[in-house]
Amino acid sequence: MPVNVLFSARPELWPVYEPLLAKGLTEAGLDFCLGTEFAPDQVDYVVYAPNGGLMDFTPYTRLKAVLSLWAGVEQIAGNATLTVPLARMVDHGLTQGMTEWVVGHVLRYHLGMDHHITVQDGVWTPDAPPLASERLVCVLGLGALGEAAARALAALNFHVTGWSRTSKDIPGVTCLYGEDGLLTALSQAEIVVLLLPDTPATENTLNSKTLALLPMGACIINPGRGPLIDDNALLDALKTGQVGHATLDVFRVEPLPPDHPYWAHPNVTVTPHIASETRPVTAAQVICENIRRGEEGEPFLHLVDRTLGY
Image (cartoon, rainbow, N blue to C red):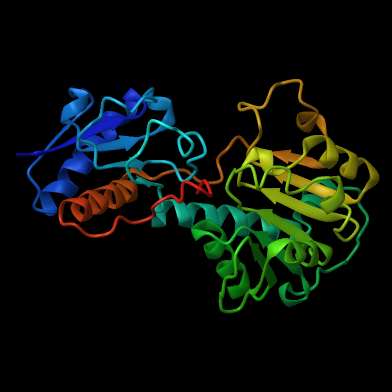
């Protein structure tokens, strides 16, 4: 009996993913059927994105796993109708893209590029930045994306502190965890990078209290999730100079409404959720490997802990 794989994502992605998934499943030696329509009780695996429309998994009585195309699973992790394993997307293409974006914006702040680009006043001011080893960067969230970014920054000799909810050990990175660790990490961070998941425990990680811990004029980079920041608290901190600049790629409402104060703020850079994205070639490889594992009785990769939400 063939393995039936339902593709439930935006319709325009199907022509992109279909040949990639077919190639990977063939190379895995599986007998399979791929499609966008099956009788629910005939589906073995769902390749999933929340914007594909599937929300009720109750009729999928044969389902073995849901394999997300997205790194973030906050829109599905709490779905009570989903009782089978859920795997999030962790692929080296997405990770590499995020690392490049984070490193680029950290270097932009570190080297003072905004000032050099915008200030053309004819005044010769040879004010060189410190070396990276003298710059304190804090990465909040040490999952696959956060760890990769922290490692890359440490490789450039930045003084990197990483924070996570549980203890981690990353060579070249000072790893802190727990509430006390967060307060310590923020109190010395000149540049803060947010790569935490969106869960009830992480909402408003940066708020009026935690922003006040930062060194005056610290910079914030958020390619993680919009709800990680209390927007009003950030705007207040920008107004007082407590935060010198913020580069924001993700927001509570997307697209960011045209009248949102971030757009016109002189000390905010808005990017339209482009820090990284799932790359079909590498994502298809991850999906196919998980289907192979499921069929051969091996543990799935990148399983979501439903109690934690990531």
